[in-house]
Image (cartoon, rainbow, N blue to C red; front, side, top):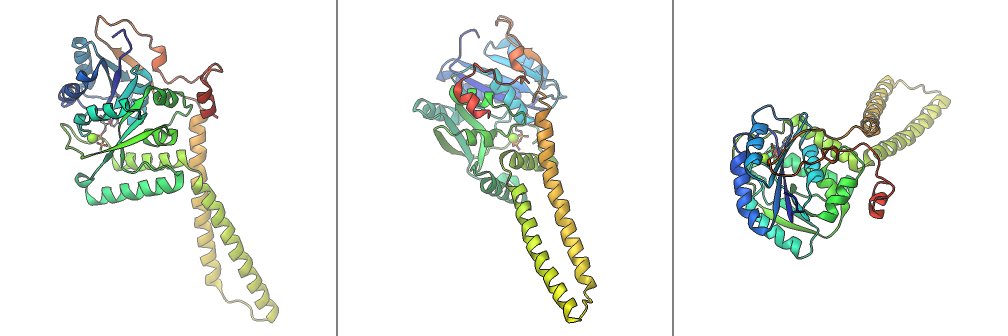
Length: 339
Ligand code: UDP
Ligand code: MG
């Protein structure tokens, strides 16, 4: 596709060999009629035949481009890769398992035409998630809202973004990205639509509990330094308590009634010790984060590109999350954002 398309549809895919063709066909049924559309499917380092399926699709459909990441970088990175590669005036990000209903695309498109820059979709229910996961997810989003000041609510990664927003997102210098949080942080005119989560078209969910907990921790640490400040507050509280206790001990010593409170000492040691350890741990998480960002490694590496044979050759340079800083000639908004 040589002309700039009106719409780009970004689809991250990890081990989706069974459902991908059906998912793409369904998405196409709803998106193709809206104008010129390009589809960018990102193979996030699958070890099954997902890449072969993508190659096959793109060799027969000129509007489909495949990107293959050199390993599994995670969905956030796969979305970033897709957003970098997308050229449309508006970009939709949607899962490859049809859990995000493609029949909402026309409605999202209308909202975009009406002037919204970001169209979020929010899961109406989480009933197919199991009560514990649903409860933990709700608590996590509450915590995120409270700590980061950004309400991502039940928002999903199924979104439509205007080119302006995509450009700002691409220009953000950080490598570790929490898509939902960043889009919320960017602002712009946002609209929200509700949807019901459909069951997966094929395959199974790729999020292990550890992966989810890591995402939750990473996203909070990326957006909020409140946990570190809380530790300082806690430390101050304990210092006041310690001062009070010291005064009391000194008073008893003066009065000649020595403290038999061995247990008090032990208790204090344990409490203070554990609080110190937690505090160090929290600071450690932030330092690890700084370390990751300082290394300036790209957030993903595009190893291969699959395109309709007749399509113009495309430079891969801009497909890698470049490590170089935003050039001084970049848009003013972008430079302000990166500070
Ligand atoms: N995915 C990905 N990389 C990963 C895990 C998932 O690109 O490491 C993709 C996956 O192929 C799907 C989407 O992200 O298109 C959502 O994944 P999944 O259905 O496993 O998650 P859930 O529906 O539970 O959010
Ligand atoms: Mg899914």
